Image (cartoon, rainbow over the protein chains, first blue to last red):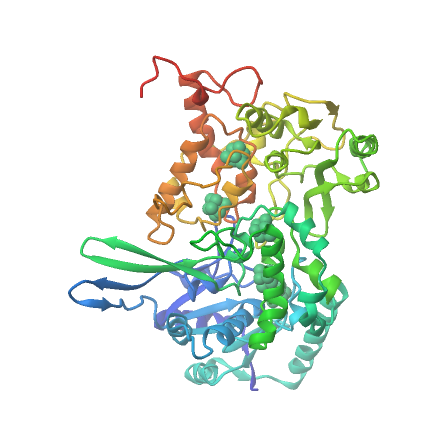
Length: 337
Length: 273
Ligand code: SF4
Ligand code: SF4
Ligand code: SF4
Ligand code: SF4
Ligand code: SF4
């Protein structure tokens, strides 16, 4: 694909231009951590951040979302969504790749998720490669980072005072053409440096954790009961691991009577919750904590790959860092990968 | 390894070897930091650690272990929580061997994407006055670490409405709290659905006020909820204010003695119904 470059200064102009034409979501400092926020001032943007505490999936699959209203006389009405024409700027490669995982799952026929599709279509995604991965990161395992992800339109990588811009989709090409004068063709020297950077970044991470991920397909059969019992003892069944995961996409719905109509909402749900599989009859096919942890790991690492040909984890490390009881998906990878 | 850690491991080993207990619950170090651990065999006692990263309140695990004899590592606040749980009939004192460790405060967790890089003692620890569990079977004095008690508490009023809007409703505050043991939580229940999960952000306010009312006069300000919270909501600030109100009105501080009856469990004729 096409490789271009842009200077720091011109990148600022690019951001300002995007801001004037579209709704801009970008990393900012807030509440003691980095988070994606709708910018009201393009100067607030932070480009040397680690990663955001919460993944940007909330822009595509919101925590709560109105699906439709039902009026007994009029029937069903759908509201139009507010931030159409958005751009998600500076997302980390792992989180951008999570979007392509979600595409494989949620856009697959016959059960296509139209709400997700709309937001995905309306939002340009521009990623920012990681030069200094955090201790929690293991994107090298799934090849979803640290340089380049898989779900973005443009990839920016800081190399020696400029940014290499890699065009990843036809839509990305269109943006670059719109702002043609800001970008220049990348010189041979800088491309050489870019290649070295990619190699070194991956090698560096491989030294920390390297596995054969194809073996994970057999996880369901191989994984031992004992491992789950040990983890189940600790797990307190909060939902942090799935709510903060950029890939977890399970939802539930709720109907609510408001004056003269019903509203149907949907929002995040998770398989680690004890009520997730409990049926009205009282029957629960995943009735113990160990069953639920087993499901979570196997779903991500072997069932999603079998059904959708992609992994349900992109190695962002959020669940690892935020779990209050230190339950660590990397242990599964190390033992069975 | 600090000498308190050495003593802790030796004790845990003895307790398991002599079958005084069948299980010791403590903390271990893993790649991702300090986490709770469950030790069944004497030789595994070597995994135990004791340092200011030992945050989670282990009393919450004792509720599920009604029939076994368990040794448990308790900080001051953890022990206070256990006092209340015993009075609420959730734990049988005879089944627990309390390894009381002298606590000098725990660090605020350094989580994913944090702006802060340096370690800091948690706010709730700066407010704490009970460093040793009020009930105990063995005491381990601390040597390894200390923090100065200078309280730089920032007690300016908080805008709770905007703070609660951040809440993910992940339930980690509820699940890490020793006192949230209702089999059907009123916040999560469907029959009736008192707090709607998905409807709007005001429901989050209802969620948090409901929870605050359910634990006022019981909460020991151990901070397990606050340190688990992925979006850093300073929950203990709210609970502390309510606890102070409770103390003024009912003359009761939770978790200090097994004898003093908790006001919510006592009927007095002058109580208004
Ligand atoms: S975050 Fe940790 S404790 Fe919470 S449900 Fe997930 S694995 Fe269990
Ligand atoms: S499972 Fe954990 S590490 Fe993997 S993508 Fe989800 S939050 Fe990130
Ligand atoms: S997991 Fe990889 S892509 Fe994601 S933040 Fe870490 S280094 Fe960057
Ligand atoms: S732990 Fe924090 S985010 Fe989770 S439900 Fe409690 S207050 Fe909300
Ligand atoms: S509410 Fe929070 S601080 Fe209070 S006892 Fe429960 S976990 Fe501890």
